[in-house]
Image 1 (spheres, helix red, strand yellow):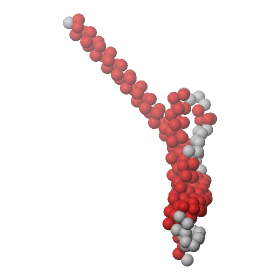
Image 2: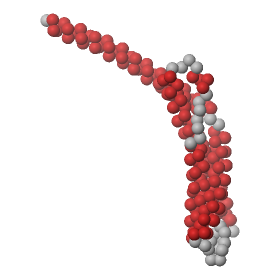
Image 3: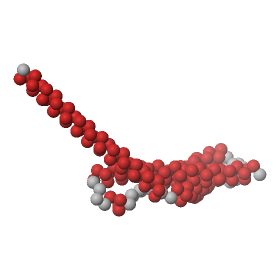
Image 4: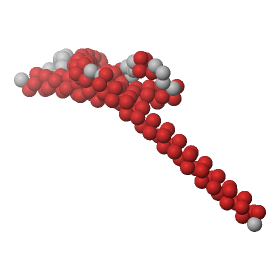
Length: 174
């Protein structure tokens, strides 16, 4: 009889502990979700999408142009054309391959630089917040800003690269 009484008390105590720990876990989960949502919302409103698209397009045009000329120059050193030419006018295989590799590097390398550009959330948003909130908000904010910057810059880079490639194709077609 005594053992049964102890078992019932233990079971009741465990039910109470589990109930309160589940409620605490749900509250922490709700706070985490709210923090992540606030960070993503702030990141979306803080980033200048047109600026990053324009930056991507600018570095895409410049990077591709530099890559094309550098690749062509390197390719002509490796496999000189007969007679010498420049940019597909009496070009060699080395120039053509160098031009393509240079164009690809000119498109991708600036995008890597944009992806690694540092992100700093405004510190005024952390006044009176717990260290856990600050850490979760900062990590979520940085990830969202990096994602948005990369997305819009990639659109700009692809537009800039496309313009350079179209101009090269148009100049060769003449």
